[in-house]
Amino acid sequence: MKALRLNGVSKTYDRQRAAPVRALRGVELEVEPGEFVAITGPSGCGKSTLLNIAAGLEVADEGLITIADERVDGRNEADLAVLRRTHVGIVFQFHNLIDELSVTENIALPAVLGGRKRPAALDRARDLLDFLGLGGRGRSSPSVLSGGQRQRLAIARALVNTPTLLLADEPTGALDSTGSAEIGDLFQRLNEDGQTIVLVTHDARLAATATRVVRMADGRLTGAA
Image 1 (spheres, rainbow, N blue to C red):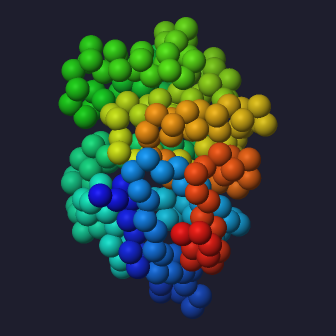
Image 2: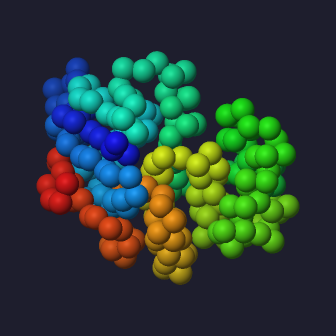
Image 3: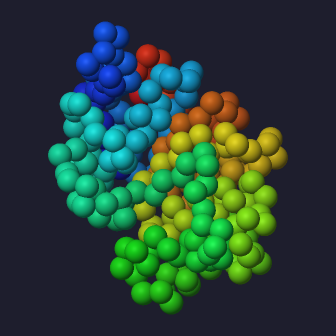
């Protein structure tokens, strides 16, 4: 089983214009269970598009995409939502937290929406808070947390359904050097515990924490794919 496979994946934007944007050009990538893969490259090279297509948030023009050997491409949105709840956790640069909910409730929400009973979802959220060093902040609003703490909270939320694959898009892009180092250490700990991770980043120090670094340019993977 491959945790993630992209075979011949292409994506073009603005096809009707004189100069369409070819974001992905026949991308080939395989990620084994338990790997920690960092994808690096300049802005605009297609990294975020690759991640969004892997998660089923965008639709590829062509190519095959699987997560845990289940096809991503060709599904309708309802089926994709089920696939994501089962197999995918996603962390973005900006946290998209709900300040009206407590820290614990923010983490538990995806589990409740996925059908887990509220007490079990809250128990899972508390376990993640303890693991991430936020055990004392469960009743707080996310608005009172530091940037690094908010990102840890977003990671906990992405992990609440025990995903096959954790995807992260520039997870340290809005953090200072201290917060970035904390998130890098956290990803390493998660990977050591068996979590499969694929992230895109401009942060060389964060990329160095991965077990494999893949470089991207002009919509293509150019090294160590």
